[in-house]
Image (cartoon, rainbow, N blue to C red; front, side, top):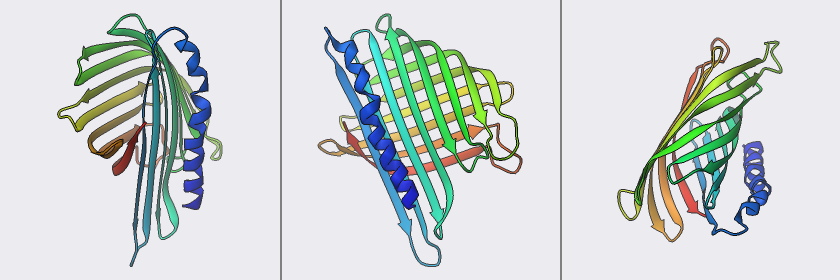
Length: 244
C-alpha cells in the first residue's frame, strides 16, 4: 500500500505541470476554471486485513471558444498485505467550440492495470461532439470519432495490439437540488481485436463549503485480456470531494 500511496501522490503532483499551458487561450476572454479532487480510503482488520485507496483529480479550463480537461485516477486494493488490484489512468482532452452546442475534440488516455494481463494501454481519438441539452441544471453531451488504440504486452511474449477504433462517449449532469447532483458517464473504443468500455454513475451531495460526499459505481470492460482474467471490473466507492 505504501507504493500505491506514493503513486497517488505523484499523480496529484503531476496536475500542476499538466495545466500550465492552458493560460495561452485566455488572452482576451474571461476564463472559467472548475475541478474536483476526490479521496476514499477503507481499511478493515481482524481475521482478514483489507485496505482500499481510491483517488481522483480532474481540472477543466474553458474560455469562449476553447475547452481543456485533465483527469487522473489511482486505485489500489490489498488483502492481508497482498495487492489484489492496482489501476492508474491519465486523460488529457482539448476542444474547440463552434457555438453553444457543437465542438470538435482531440483526446488521449493512458491506462495501467497490472492485474489485467497487459503492461499498458493507450487510446488516442478525435471527433465531433454536441451538447444536446444545455440548461442551468442539466446538460447532456455526446461524442463520436475515429481513434487509434495500442495495448502493450511486455512480459508475457504476446504481440502488442495496434488497431483503429471507433470512439463514442456520452455524459449527463443533472443538479436535481441546490446541494445534490447526478452524473452519468459512458465511453467506449470499438476495435476489431479489442474493445474497451467504461461507465461511471455517481450521486454527489454538498456537505459544507467546498466539501462534498460522492457515491459512485464504476464498470470497466476490456475484451483484450488473457484467458482466465475477467473482462469486467466494478468499483463501488464513497469519496470525500473537494470542489476546486
